Amino acid sequence: MIFGGMQRSSTIDFPGALACVLFTRGCDLDCFYCHNRELIAGDGDQLAEAAVFSFLEKRRGLLDGVVVSGGEPTLQPDLEEFLRRVRPLGYRVKLDTNGRRPALVERLWKEGLLDYVAVDVKALPADYPAICGADCFSDVRLTIDTLCSLGAAFEARTTLYPGLDAGALGELLASFPPLPRWRLNYFHMPGAFRPVDETRLRLPALTPQSVGEALPKLLAAQPNLLHGA
Ligand code: SF4
Image 1 (cartoon, rainbow, N blue to C red):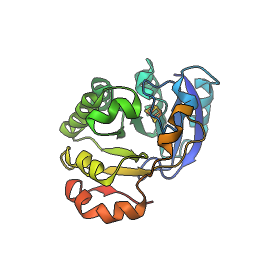
Image 2 (cartoon, rainbow, N blue to C red):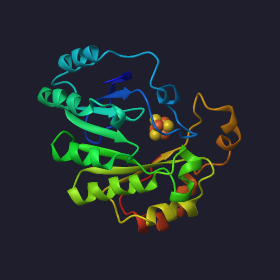
Image 3 (cartoon, rainbow, N blue to C red):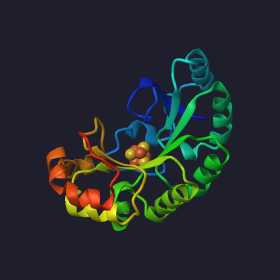
């Protein structure tokens, strides 16, 4: 596994668990609002896997869970092997994914290597190429449909990127059946971005107030919507 860093503890990244967050290097998308831009390329400073396991050994019984995030963890060829080594340590495992590899997520879930999955649903299908650089909504959709059919514990999550209005958000939420959980993340300006994106990064973004005004319609589409600031 190629790790770019680790957050040693978090109370907000894994529902119901005190967890560390491991950030893998490399991503096959390029979202214009990405907050982990330094992780998109696969190269750069690495955190050795041995150091990760040393940390996990020491924190047994103190942390409940491990979040494998990125970058995009499903790009790591030894992800499954890594999870098989984490399991015996007694941690619950959450996978954060952009949803492009439904077959891998299905296999990991069926093999009992995951306890929770967060899948990014970034935009309406036609907007995917402009927002994240790839026309991959159908893969994301299949990942969600697969998790639903498996009865898996999971959430969809959407960053309220600048330029996304309440109408388009409502349309996106309504294009799926009610999901176990759908989390809205409010936009914050990333520390690093491509200069070409600066204009659209400064477009208006939905706020807790504007989401609140649209809430009846949003909740009608997704009753399990998490929309706190
Ligand atoms: S999928 Fe995540 S890590 Fe990859 S570019 Fe988008 S926001 Fe960044």
